Image 1 (cartoon, rainbow, N blue to C red):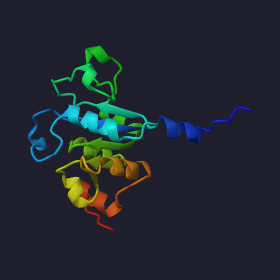
Image 2: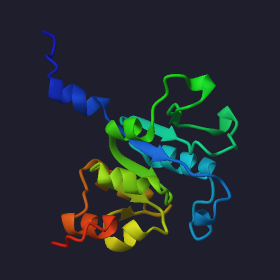
Image 3: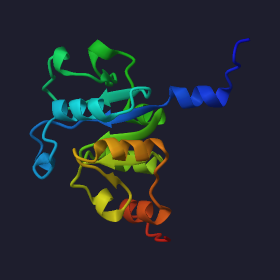
Image 4: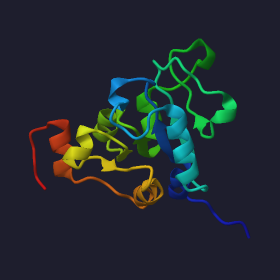
Length: 169
C-alpha cells in the first residue's frame, strides 16, 4: 500500500538551506575566516546534511564565477539577467528557506525581517545582538545541525538587531 503524502510533509521537503554569497574582495570579508565564495560553497557542502537540499545564491553584483568543477552546491537563479529570465529575487529565495547561511551579507537583515533564521561566520552586528547564530569552520557541522533542529533567535534579539525599539527578552 502506498504511503499517503500530506501537504504538511510536502511543504517540509520543499524547503532548503539557502547559502547567500557576497562579492569577493568586499571589505566586509576582511575580518572573517571565510574569504571567498568557493570556500563558502565547499565548507557548506562538506558539512550540510546530505538529505537536505542546499541552494547557493551568489551576490548579483559578483563578477567572478568559479569554474563549475569547483562548485558543489546547486545555484539559485538570479534576477535581471538575460541568461536567467524568470529568475527569482532575494525575497523569492527566502520564501523557501529553512534558514540562511552566509558570511556576513546585508541579506541577513532581509532574512531576519522575513522570519528566516540565519547562521553566519561574521563579523556581523546580528551575531553581537543574538539575532544571528554564529558559526566557524570548526563548528559549522554542529551549527548546521542546530539550525536544522529549529534554532531561532529570541524576539528581543530580533528587535534589537532590526532596531524596532521593542526589547523584550
